[in-house]
Image (tube, rainbow, N blue to C red; front, side, top):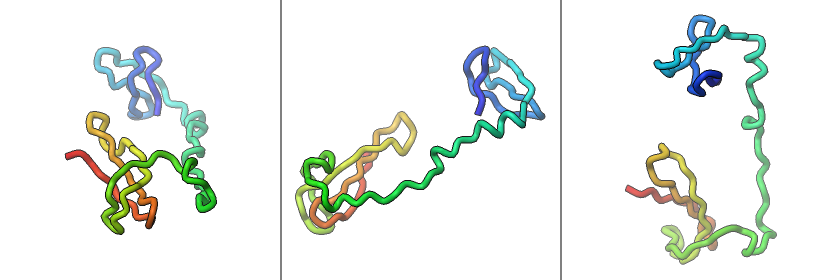
Length: 109
């Protein structure tokens, strides 16, 4: 991915050149394929290790909320919120029951 040095818009590769997607700008640059191979990052491709949380106290587990587990009926669950849809839509809430470990999610409709 490359951004325009003139206006900051995202550029698109076309016929050996980078072309600015901003019609008002129209800036182009010659692609340097040898340099572009160095742009790939491996950081996001690393595998993460499984973390054993069995010996961690409840205070270190993260936020919990009062909600009924659909699996066992327990009234407490850990939760986290993630933006998995477009930015103009609400976050999705992921729950994990503190009793049985059942996982579920809730979306706003």
